[in-house]
Image (cartoon, rainbow, N blue to C red):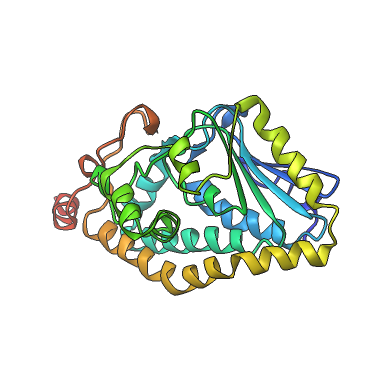
Length: 289
């Protein structure tokens, strides 16, 4: 079992606030600025979601982010340093952290609401796995870090989530072209439940959460489990294998060139990932010299 005071200040980029049995998880950047996805966050998510799942004081969970974007800033620094140190160990860790992140999220046994407050262009699979997805009017979805930008296979759960939500052909198009999916189209396709002005988004999430807390714990947990059994099945069957495909590509052509600066706003334009990668044999030859 876990309690809020044990994990409330445990994670650098994740804050927690609970009122009336409703836990608000808020991702944030340094000094409360925009959230920046980095290697430490990738590692912390699985542990944080496990803490949330083990805390019986949580009856409903809201996932949101500080600022007016959900996840557009990506820090390559920690990943590249990890890969430079030992590419095989690095990808073993990335695979383990990636698997734990999504499985621990699905292991949260109470309903989850995502309040997406703006564009999400990396790891968009996470918020749309919530039971109810609310989004601000200027939100769009994209995969800006995998195949379409010259990067690795989208095997970290993006493949499973988006081909399931959009359908196989539409999902493959989304993942292989780098399409920006506007929130209005995401709503029409059933990915997003409600589109709201940003200043009304969080209030609506809390309104729903308070409605749900009128139900018993057994009903809350049973509903969450019943409605997510298919996601757990799909992740159990596919995630480890497809993360391995991503890792295999990452070992064959390691990410070794550090962009300047290392933190990139991918909403401003996708970074050509293949410009940061080098074939493994060239990396080994350079190290030998």
